[in-house]
Length: 274
Length: 231
Image (tube, rainbow over all chains, first blue to last red; front, side, top):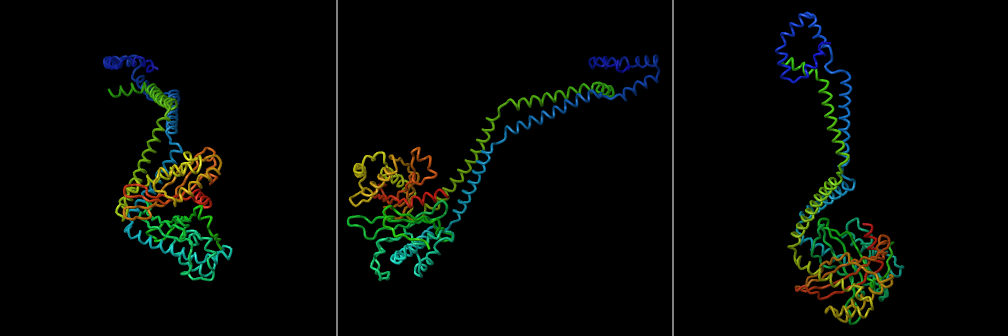
């Protein structure tokens, strides 16, 4: 209990207390000895050591404060994280942009590996010319097709189709190897001739020459179907067109697009798939 | 001496502990208050914008690289003159726009034909553009209700022949209706799209020396619109 009484003296400024202790130490000892004897001093010291440095109450209060501090710290951290999080939209946009860049880089890499484009343009044109000839061969069957109600059949037709097929990628639709356009007027051509040479169709397909390769590394080729017997004083009208992309690596056409002009559609011989 | 200091600390350990914990709590409380009451959405938006901008920059750089690879590849090909092809495309676009400009020529076929004939020299009496295309184009525009306004949304001429210094181009231009009503059901109706086939010639001087336009059949228009919608 004496030691507790000592506490206030400890609250005095450091220097003074130390000096005081230093000065008073022998006096203290003497006083102690005189008053309570060595045993009392010993008892006092052991009491001071057995008493916990921090009382239970202090532990509870201090511990509570520390826990509260940790909790608020975690909470503020969470709030900050949540408020700094990127929105879903931003993340999806970012992902889309990354994917886009990747695909562009892939296209550029494939494009820079293309060799001998000038030769590829020539082979594309040759292949396109053969397609035009085969499409023109279909004209000979216009009479037969018209008499069959537009049905496309017969060994001759199959032969043309078989010859067309190798020019196209395997995944193009069947329409690509069917007649792209037939003129209804051809159906009334003198029947029984059956000879290609004597057949004078009112229109013809012609393959157009490609000059460029696209950024996707394919060669876009066009075909035009124009009148062969235009009315007097008029230039031959375009009846239909076709477009396809030639792959210089696979050496086939894909993405076939066939269309007719309004005039061509009026003069068209209907063809139905089998 | 250290023993006295230890004693001194021992005596005040409780206080120091509580004071320390209090200071800690004060700090984290202020951090919490700061986190709650400061609006950081601006900062987040800025971060997002920076991220998107940097990704867009990288994407654009990749596209530029692709274009330069493409240009290098194409530049040396026979008959190719990219600068001239760019100029020709612009010249042809202008002709196409005036041929299909319904607002200026919607009064009647004859005034439209006369206007175009006087503006361009390359159409003669055998021209199908003036005698067939213009009346057709105007008629279908009238049939589809009030005079429809179209915007040309696709115009990519492909060079199909080189004859000396004369280039010939072919292409199919796409037009989209721009009226509010048409735009509303643009997704469901193919009727708001129209296609025009064209074949045109240019001279070395960059002059358009020939231009023929054809209305694309409605059957093909529907097929193209469908193909476009599904892709």
